[in-house]
Length: 112
Image 1 (cartoon, helix red, strand yellow):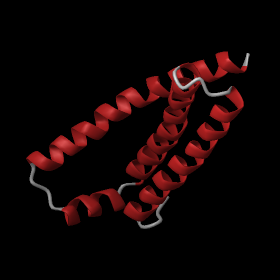
Image 2 (image 1 turned 135 degrees about the vertical axis):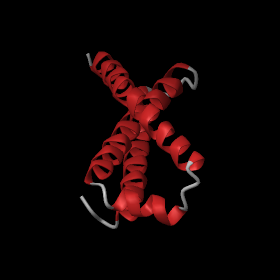
Image 3 (image 1 turned 90 degrees about the vertical axis):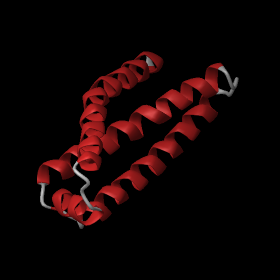
Image 4 (image 1 turned 45 degrees about the horizontal axis):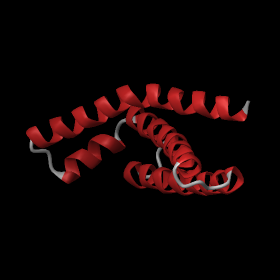
């Protein structure tokens, strides 16, 4: 039953992330085409509570999605025991979440 739940969770996070990736890439494209400076991009990010929420949610989705995929690879291709793969994926989740949230916190000046 756990495998089914993790499978569904990974697919759910992928479905949520898909439009987020498009928004993120469109934002990058806009910033480069408009030749925005790093300072102006940072000012825009810091002045928008919506972007704080967006990137926080994006980080959470990635922190869940990526370790679940790596867990499955470790079990199926790496022939790792499930308990070891679970531990590795949990550690990766904590690392990805911590690094991502720290990045959001740094870019938003601790807002949100």
